[in-house]
Image (cartoon, rainbow, N blue to C red; front, top):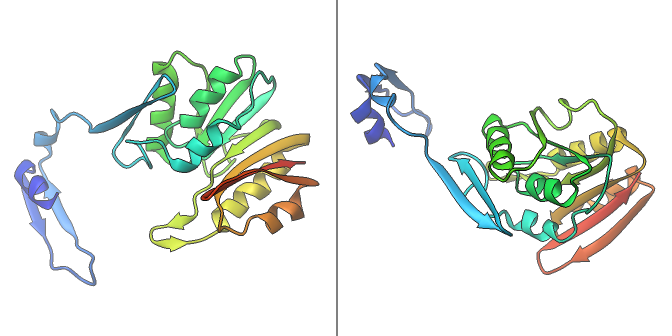
Amino acid sequence: LLNWLEEHAGYYEQLPVVRKARLIKIRGLAGFRDLLPSTRSYEINGFSLSAPAGVFCGDRPDPGARAMLKHLPSNQTGIICDLGCGNGILSVHLASNNPEATIIGTDDSQLATLAARENLRANSLKGDIRQGNILSSVEETLDTVICNPPFHDGHKQLTSIAESMFHESFHQLRSGGELLVVANRHLPYTKVLKRLFRNVELISDDKRFNIYRCVR
């Protein structure tokens, strides 16, 4: 990458490395103007999905999302939110399975939301994709939330992001609304979910993933 930047920039200077960090000065970006953005794509269940580099699992279905697909709601009305939508793999299926529902997808990554919006359009489906931290961009009261939460920050494993997603989902769901969560089996989400929701059911478990249905 550094060699590529040096070749295409009008001016390139790399300062000495300090504790694995490096500062690079670049000027004269005319050489970048004609470069096409790098995108990756795959097919799943008759849908074509693509994403630019930097979007999680842009070149293949995320295993957690794939596990969730057969448990997604169908023929619902109301408002369904794909929380942490990524490139929109679940949003696309939700929009196809629930044509009378309002589909909202939200993610904190601008690249992810751009990809999800484009994937809905490319598959002739409707959905409202918004950028924001957890549910900060969603004001509506929700009927259903679908959540495939991240549990890594770099190489560090954590549960705090998922727990925040569960709390905000609880407060924004209507009474009787449902949260569907897919998670790696070893993650300790059951106690957190049971503290929030009046009914938590394990609807699927395999060697790798648990899927919970939580009723507010």
